[in-house]
Length: 350
Ligand SMILES: Cc1cc2nc3c(=O)[nH]c(=O)nc-3n(C[C@H](O)[C@H](O)[C@H](O)COP(=O)(O)OP(=O)(O)OC[C@H]3O[C@@H](n4cnc5c(N)ncnc54)[C@H](O)[C@@H]3O)c2cc1C
Image 1: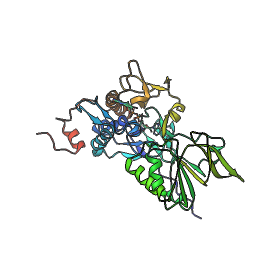
Image 2: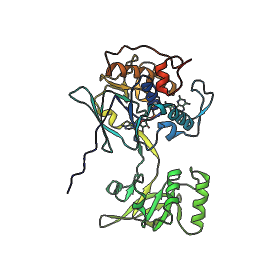
Image 3: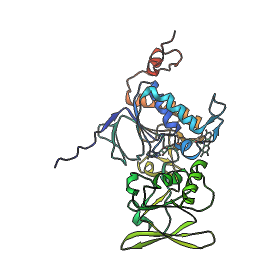
Image 4: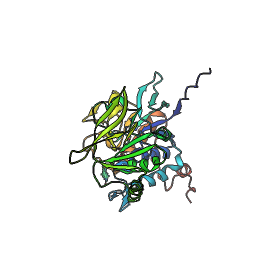
C-alpha cells in the first residue's frame, strides 16, 4: 500500500487570515508593493460580515461611492484585486500559527493546508464564523455523523430520512435540493414566515402540498435514540403540542455566528477580545504579525470599513519592511508610477 503524499507546504511572502472586506483590500495594498499573498477564510466565500450578515443592505460611507450594496462592495474588491492573483483558501479555519526557527511563520488550517510565510496579516474581524448548534440534550453525541450543520457531501443524505431545521436560504435550498433524492424530507421551522428567497419558499410549499416533503412549524425539543443511534426527533409547536418525526439525518441550518476562536490562542497581546496593535504599521505584539480591521484595538479605533482600508495600506508597508528590511521604501502614486501600473496590468502613464 502506498502512503498518501503529505500536502505540499505553500511558501509565500504573506498569509492573510480572513477574507472580509479589509483582508481583501490588504491583497491589493500588498500587490501594489509587489508582494504576493495567500488568503484564508473559514467561510466558503469571501466577504466576511458584508456577505454573511448584510449582503443586501446599502453602505453609504465608502469614500467616493455614495451608496454601495454590501455584496456589491465585496464584488468590487474582488475585481480590484484580480491583477494580484492571490491564492484563496476558503472553507478552512486557520487553527495554528507559530514562528519557525528560521524566523518565518508556519500557519496551519483545519483542512490540513500548511503555509510557510514571511509575515502574517490577521484580518479576522469579529472572529471565525461558526454554525449555531442544535441546543438539545445529547446533540453533541451525533454531531458529524447524524447531526450536521453544513453539507460536505450531498450524497451522504441521499436515500435517507432527513430532517432539515431552519428558515433561511440554506434550509430552503437544501430542502429543495434533497427533495426526491433523500428517502423523505421534513422541514422544521419555528414560525410560519421564512427568511429565504420567496421563490424557494413558494416551491417548497408546492412540494409540501403535493406530498413530496413535510413542513412542520415548531422547534426540536429532544432527540429520539435507540442503541446509540439517532432515530428521530420530537418537535414542539407553539401551543406545546409535540410530534415525533422519524429521521436518521438532521441538518440544522441556524445560521452562523462569529467566535474569536484560535486567534486568542496565538500568544498575541489582547485588549477586550481584540489584538493590540501600533498605529504606525498595525503590527501586533509579535514582530511580523500584523492585525487590521475589526480584529484590532488601538486608541481611537473605529470598527468601520474605511478605517480597515487605511490600516491595510500601512500594514502592507509594515509587511514589506519586515520581509525586506534592506529595501528602500518610498510612496508612489498609481496614477504616475510605471511599476505600479505594470503590477496593475494597465498601460504605462503617458
Ligand atoms: C449590519 C451591519 C451593518 C454594517 N454597516 C456598516 C457601514 O455602513 N459602514 C461600515 O464602514 N461598516 C459597517 N459595518 C461594519 C463592517 O461590516 C465591518 O467593520 C467590516 O466587515 C470589518 O471587516 P473585516 O474584514 O475586518 O472583518 P469581517 O468582515 O468580520 O471578516 C473577517 C473574516 O475573517 C474570517 N476569520 C476569522 N477568524 C478566522 C480564522 N481563524 N481562520 C479563517 N478565517 C477567519 C471570518 O470568517 C470572516 O470572514 C456593518 C456591520 C454590520 C453587522
